[in-house]
Image (cartoon, rainbow, N blue to C red; front, top):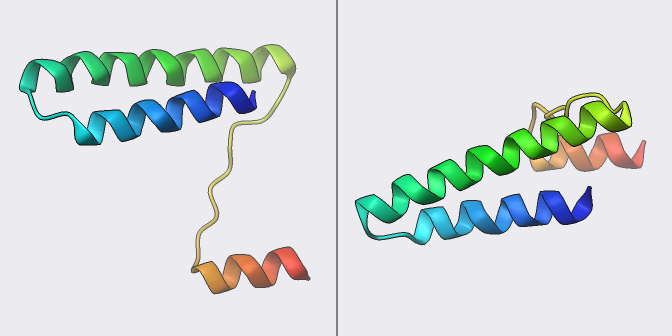
Length: 66
């Protein structure tokens, strides 16, 4: 799972760096494919969807330390 998430992160970074419209379209498709792959893997493993933390970095740190 970590490898899939890292791959998605890397592909998103490449998408942000892409300069051509054609390249952006292609990388957008790749990002969507990786997101779908991760969703399928989570379902297969019985994991919940990733929950996002709503708050500041300080709030997150406090929540983790308490």
